[in-house]
Image 1 (tube, rainbow, N blue to C red):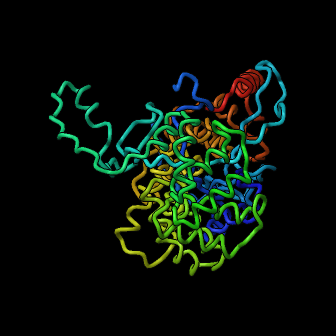
Image 2 (image 1 turned 135 degrees about the vertical axis):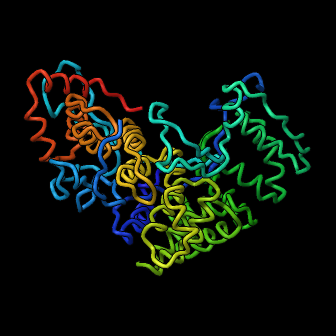
Length: 447
């Protein structure tokens, strides 16, 4: 389901940030199982600079009414000089003939709505350098045991420690779900249907998902809605979450706000991570202001602990902005931002880069900040592209490079973000430098 197509879902994505004054949209989390295989049949059964004065910590939305986070300590980057691009969300910069001389170039393609498919896997949080493409915290502290620790020992020539014996799995084996995970969708359906018809709520959710995605069968959203409803009424948390989304969307089934809220809360209270995040959003929608934020906070916390990047990002903002929170929570603001950034949330990557450069919620680290802004910019985040240009101009976390600065200015301008300060810088480049910047911008491919 495309979340932005649903008014209520889309509206909810902006509520938390509006309450904080951040203007950063949240995407709704989806927790549909993500199979490892993509086939739809059973074929074969088969250099740090000087510190920069503090910036506004919450900035990323290119279409915000107010200017996105500025760099007030950097010459040529006044906080009120940046006008917003026309389209919301990170957009891929325009590409075209690398020898083209035009500054504006072809119109950029908008980036598709971000859908979250939580894997339930925890992400390692250790210290990496920008050259690794995954810079870490400015304070150099390890926030949790790195999952790659054994590999580090091996590379250092240290004998690997003996691993404890793996405990035997004693839980119930779900052969239908196992087949689904391996991409054996017909087998999954054959195994799940009898159980679903007998009232097994988990099997009903699996059958609904197969119909909803068109895996192994012709896509049929009405059949999917029928089985999601059965699963929801049978108490399966994933089924309740998915059926709540259908009730909110109001396309396949009649829109029912009260029933949707009820199923979403039940799923959240039962431990469904995506439902926890979304129910938090509902609370913020229903109770504007600090009251809603504080009511939503426990749900964001539970969701974040289960790996939902949207919730992790939300915690980083709430732990920074809400007053009266215990120190053990506020101290973790940057940790949660790191986790969201590592999960690929480009808004978190942008904010983390800014936090590191300015020393927000931790020590300054210009090189790491440059690395995160570079990652967000290369991923297509327009504001990050704009900010990265300033880092190249002022040699913050990197060496000065006017052509690279010009490239990122061209890309962000093509995406609709107009910045008079950067435009003045660009016009001051030589003709050769301008041509090189445009050529580099035309070669850009989001990664």
